[in-house]
Length: 293
Length: 273
Image 1 (cartoon, each protein chain N blue to C red):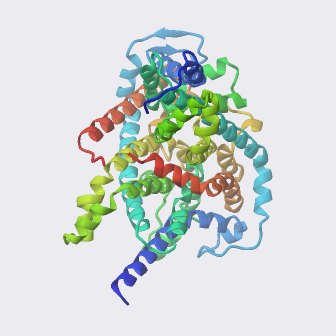
Image 2: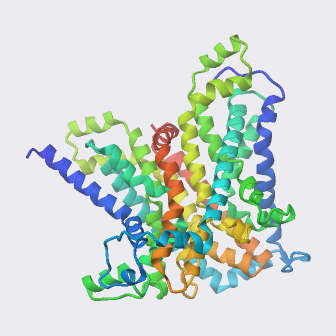
């Protein structure tokens, strides 16, 4: 766009509402949270002592924190890998030229509107130990009745399934949008050259989809680390015995339940570093390897 | 049968299977919401719904769902409208004017993508408390009014609108604000439609911040209501819980289906280059 409106003060006026909100509710709290991580704060916030990196040292000495850290990592890797591959497969199916594709599309993306808490409630029912559907079916099919939500490892698996399911709609939407941008001519010429469907997918479609995949990678990691809070609070409340207490749930408990303000602020800052890390990684990768049209 | 027809059949079957897998948890919650405890606890599980809807009023009354739906609606509608208006103004300023510090201000908006709620939650809670906003609508609405995502989607849309329109408008002596509201706004209806869906669902489905920033029964939102419903049913009366779950998913689904066309169009545009 070459031409502009000429006005000295209007653009600042137009931007000011956004900037004021960002300053008061985003930049200032982020900075203040970082500062608080360097203090030991009395439970009601009226007294604080500067302690430097003490909170961080405590955190990495705490085996419970390390446990949550590793749990978050495993959780996010599995949720991202499973979520992206399943939704890419479904999006590829929906992208075929078939009758009723529009109706099918609606029927597959609507779970986008559902919340993590709702997913937690439904899966808590499906896997509950006394009358859950899953217990019954595994008993009929395999003769076993696993204690889904009372065994730590199994509860973690249920949490992964519920979280993956909840984000399918979102991922399918973005893959569908991405697929629409894959140039049809490229595919057609490749098929004339005798490339099979599988070869075409890995040689053409998948590389062309890489911007979408990287975008979804970041959004899904952030979803797994943060937005899954509601799901956990409804499904397991972090239990049994911390087996599903990922970092965000620990942060909530340390800050809101146990009032460990400085310590929680330090936990928050680690999460900030994580967001920065993955964003930088995305920018670097998309800059170098990702295929742009 | 030709191979093309056979392929189409296979695709249809696979898609219908996917739909079943994706929808099954919700279908089951609908079925359970019509069952009595005896039916829920029968073995083998009863997969047929009944025609008894008495769980719905029970769920509604047991935790006061009506008030929660009101709260969630007020928060979601206010944030959606407020955020779209503020983002329209910001995107307009960043695309249609030249001014000192433009790149810096763009960068300031951009960098907020690095600041989701959990990385600032400790101090955000303290600020909200110091404003005496805890347990009020202010806490649920004001911190969410500005958004990098909405501003960028609108910037992308504005950049695809031919600059000849602006030149013509300037020749006609059209004021900037009139140009924004009478030319750009109607041309961006699909992007705005997509934003309505994204923002409404985002606010409606929020959990952590409402859990911390509200505490009275009068100010609770529906997502917390789901948890309260489970805790209120000491005997795990899943029929009532699932009825509550179904009620809380209706408003965002309505918004999604009503706005679906412009949502999909807005997205296809947004992902172009």
